[in-house]
Amino acid sequence: MDMSGIDFAFSVPEGQSASATVLEACRRIWPRCVVRHAEEDVDRPIDDVALWENDVRVGEFFVYRSAADAENWHRNGSTLGNAAGMIHVMIDLNSVENDALPCIIEVHDPEDERIHEILNEIETGFAAPASN
Amino acid sequence: MPDSGRSGSSSRERLVYHYTDEDGYKAIASQPVWKFKASRPERIDNPFGAYFTTEPPDAKNLAEKIGVSWQKTRFYFAFADYGDLRPVGTSRPARYQRKFYSPIDYEVELHRQRGSGENPSWT
Image 1: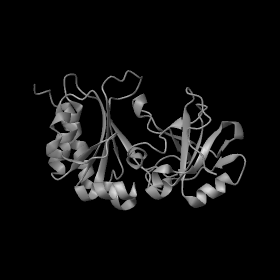
Image 2 (image 1 turned 120 degrees about the vertical axis):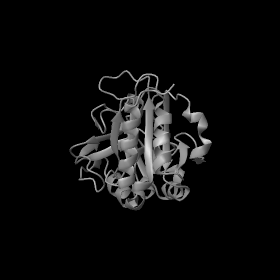
Image 3 (image 1 turned 180 degrees about the vertical axis):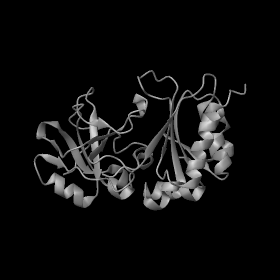
């Protein structure tokens, strides 16, 4: 069984919405991205996920570069050809385990330039002071 | 006859799963003691090992959650967790810690085996 994916772990400043920061970063780099909650089987355009931009303390979702990328992942799972088309977001702001960071972004092609830009945007977003 | 991954297990027991294709399934299932061979992953720079997950065959979005191709999830093996497998991605919060590996070949004797067969999500 070959499992792909490398984790990038982020601290989340107090008072900042992890989900909003991640989704905004994805929107900037992938303007046509679609989002699927980990326990649902529906893809939503990024502009339809305003609900998740509230402060999600615990949540898991996938962001696909486009609807076509989402379809590719649903049909084939992880392949070399679609590795740059999805990031996997895991948030648990209630986590209290030692050494665990509350926002994990799993990527399948860390060498892809756009993926790299998304990770940089997320890192910058978490470094910025909360805007509320 | 393939059986359910959840059958024969107590309610408190955590199960671990290994997914594979038809050839892998036949090779492992042909022996009374299941032997999962450690190898160098073809994708990404994960450690040499035999890989497992706590995600069951009916998990929503299984391929996305554990990063596998659908071709490699057609068959599964389920067995009781002894807590001796190493986590992949150690900085994850516990609720998302679902990928594990053994750095050497990993054997599962009959008393730990809980089920195997074709993934119902495929049919």
